Length: 505
Ligand SMILES: Cc1cc2nc3c(=O)[nH]c(=O)nc-3n(C[C@H](O)[C@H](O)[C@H](O)COP(=O)(O)OP(=O)(O)OC[C@H]3O[C@@H](n4cnc5c(N)ncnc54)[C@H](O)[C@@H]3O)c2cc1C
Image (cartoon, rainbow, N blue to C red; front, side, top):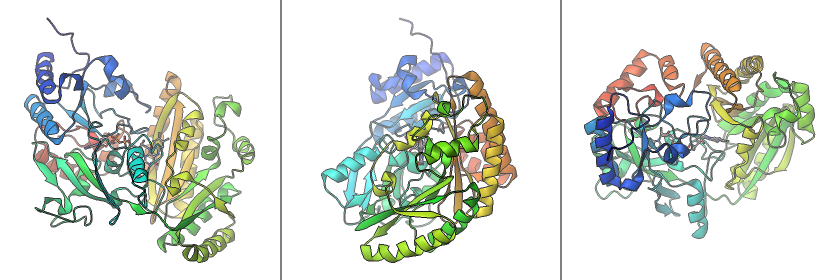
């Protein structure tokens, strides 16, 4: 019987060769775990970005359940030169979701590897596989009644710590920098060898999740935002539950206060008085929790500021809205509350010391998804130009963003966020993905925004599959050449995620 022709083939691989590879892959993972029918692939194909779906169509998906199966898959893919795009929970929404950076890659879905291998309440650490979600880890901790908190990104219940950490994703508590709180990886290299980083390579090691650097070069960074290996285990540091906490809302009643707000936050973050990131949500972003754009604005242009503000104020929202949390004993919190109240009031902020933000206090939620309701239609591309945490830079970024978004008919939905010495000006470009004109406008606006930020010296810490190569070029030839040298050394056939972070063999 002749098999139906495959709709999408890996670049440079003929249909008969791909069919042979698939036959061998079916032996490795079982036939039901090799998906090539378009229908079976639909869950992988939902692209939110403003990019032509077709350019990122996968040739199939394969679901491995063990390290041995991952090694088996790699052997076949090396033999037939089939490119493999590993995903963990595959919900990289606003950056490419589960889709590969180039057409025709075979998605290696690791969601079946979903064991929580260890949670140590004494050291506050965990060891997880790629498919573990934050919800699963949260439930596990709750069932064992352990005094541990999780830090998770927006979308926390659906996504997982391993994939998020490999993207160097962020959350909202003092453990917000996920890579900074990762400790030890197990990585399957392209040739099938298994590397354990940090203390993990030492026979009989008893400190894999306790000490990050091991001996010699610190390798873990090489496996984040890269295509140098497949990570099959990740160690995590978890936050011990604090004795108590107090979440504070600071609101600034005028747009011009952004600069002052950032100047006020930075010293408090650097001194450790505020231990978690400080995201300043603008009125439009905060308003997405309550209203849709269509209720305020039927024009093709951006919603006027005055209209946004008047609607926002009905819900107690101001031009800039910041919430952060003080963690610790009541004795620790009281003096810090005095310090922050004085500082924010002096800068013109109104302080409410009795606020609640679930993401800052270990309560998983899907609140962030409200921003997609603003226009509907499921289009989302994130842009977060990075600057030093200086008020003048935040204001300049705001002006660039507002100008370009407005010219293309989009609203400026933003949360400039001070992490420490760095500020990431998070901007959500939301649009109706089903409307080809809106998609085209979003694509143009994204490129124009990215160009303008780069021309002003603001790079990006992460980007979508449609902009990875362009962004990598901005970081210069030496940077690219070093990455290429590593790629050739670690993956000579170039089968792992070509195009990831702009790195190609
Ligand atoms: C409303 C909303 C809010 C969001 N808020 C946040 C936020 O607060 N913080 C944040 O960081 N993100 C946020 N995101 C973006 C995104 O949803 C998260 O970053 C999410 O955690 C990434 O998806 P994932 O965890 O399923 O990772 P995956 O999609 O599984 O992995 C991400 C990428 O990492 C690589 N990768 C994954 N697994 C492996 C592996 N085992 N080996 C090698 N490479 C691998 C692949 O390139 C993959 O594409 C948000 C998205 C939305 C829509």
